[in-house]
Image (cartoon, rainbow, N blue to C red):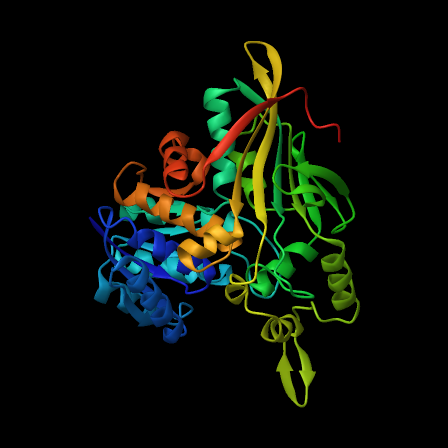
Length: 401
């Protein structure tokens, strides 16, 4: 049984800690730290009520490497599960190196002053983690995370090579708000408003944000408009599976969301550069985050389902085939189990699974790794056992668009 430290007490952190506590044979001791200790205490109280397990809680500013290192030396975990903001990834990795602790996250680093999503900053830690005899696992959420494992599972079991890969992320839930985001508003809006990019024949093709739209009929949800976006797993998949000619990422948004977001952009509320207000510097997007509903508060009112998966076309024994592999998750079921809606659930459960495979030594190595570099089978087995069952079906042909 292992001791782990989770950093981050939002919805994803809450789900991950609840699911860890439900598996005490793997996670013998669990600690939870955040900038706001009261959030950790609230999660610990819920875990105690639901599972009977006790969670130790701590206050930490994860931007402070020295303080985070001191906390790691005090707690002595074998693994840090970073579920904080992506801006803090490098600081937490530095602290893990200083304290000699393995590292895992669900989202790649991005600089706070620029909406730029690249793995280069974290891949640059490869030699430092290798020399320290430590492992860093990047991107064990759903996307990135499960969607990359879906791709490697298809290549292992259904296709000899993959030619095209489309990742489709549909949230068919309704939270009853005029406008809200299902995870951190600042990260969500930066992601959605960034230029779209997809991988095609060895190069990146960039298009303006939210300009390429297709309609797709998602099982258990229905027809939804989905938009071409950039997501970090495109970069790691293109790097680790260079055979793939085209990789695209699609996410669904309702018309009301797009309308609200367009207005907010037009009036400057999505800016990430500072402006002066009453003699003080403020970041408009951070102010907007403060007035929008807290994503973790949406669980009680959110109804409907998510449907996230991959459509891959490639060759099997010389014949072209297309497979669709996906998970459907119910918001109300997720809330009943952990007190969080399905968007948090579909990221928090894979975070627990990645941590479990690391602490059990099923996935191991020295250096910095993306999730698609490991055997997909144990991960896929745990998805079925821990709340995210998947299904795969063969399609008549590749996507028409």
